[in-house]
Length: 230
Image (cartoon, rainbow, N blue to C red):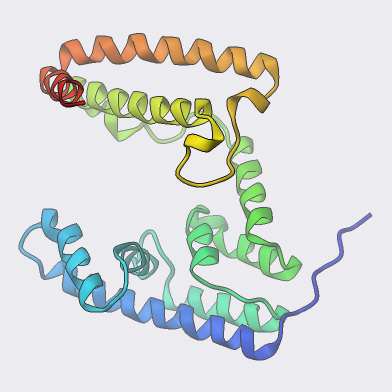
């Protein structure tokens, strides 16, 4: 049985969402010009932080606005017009969260994904599910990761992946009361075979991280210093 499309939202709410996204795009265009004029790339985040305070906004919004207006990673003005046209056509409210998810779709399939999401009136959680299904269908391989450009970059890249995994494992293992925000999945609610596999991976990652630290003395020293300060 085909899934029914959601009824359209009130026209004024749809139009308000369209205007907000258009304003975000225009702001992103100007931000990119201002950032390009900076003398050093390293000062961009600090500059965005400063601009966010001056505009009573936040750095994350400004960064997303700049990404939205990026020619390579974001949308062209024609793409944006197309998204806004479809939002009006199907009566859907679009905003930052929708745009952020749309930008995670490869550019070649981005507009077809927008058509699907807006036509069916998918919620953000349903869009997330669609995106996860898309990721699972992708073939292995593709472009070689940048971290494999040299031995040192491979070591640093692997170490960063280890840190990310350790943080994820720590979050999964925490009790609900110890978390800064309520909710979230715990390791104990996952299927038993998945729990066992997660622990196996955690043990392997710990070994890998310790091995990498022997080849990254600065990382090892900073970690030991942080441990002593606790």
